[in-house]
Length: 226
Image 1 (cartoon, rainbow, N blue to C red):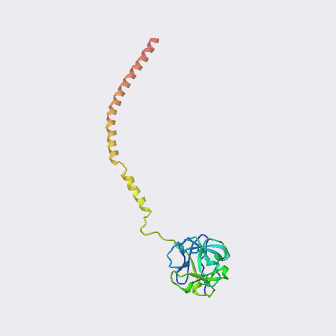
Image 2: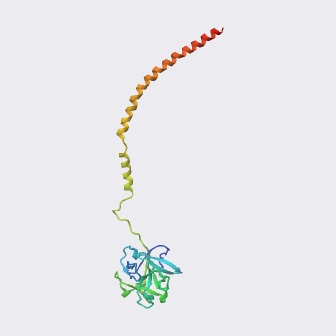
Image 3: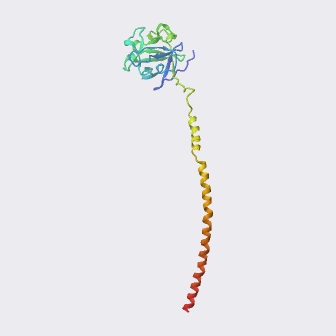
């Protein structure tokens, strides 16, 4: 059988954990210790997403994104049929899980403290709401899980686009320009310039008339010295 590549588990990332029916592992939306773990229809909810905190080679603690609680064995049980629940991080053996890859891209999730018993669905159910438990390894579809990167929710279609505000900005700037007032000022400057020109021309002849007098005075003075 050809081996299928496994999903690479990365720290600080979130994943869905789905069984053969396509349902995903889901934590009850509660902050209380003891909240149930069950199957649910994949709806991209935080309570259906899990992160893997590495403890050792292939061994992880599994944390629910929505509640922040750890995947745990109820009452620390090890017998077949022990239910799973959520509990605060206690860094204990009942919260440690072995991720064992198979050849088809899926994994078995084994309880480390329960002699490697596998996560299983109560009554072999494929219905949403079915509780999860541990059971001895029977190598069945009911004990195989697909770990996949969680898909982020897309923005709603009716959400406003970023470019809308930018398009409105130039319109507001143009309405503020007082185009009419600028035209009124231009004629006022042109009307004053003709009045100043004759006055400047009248002064010019007076300056030229004084120049000959000064020259004549110098010429007379030279004759007296002789």
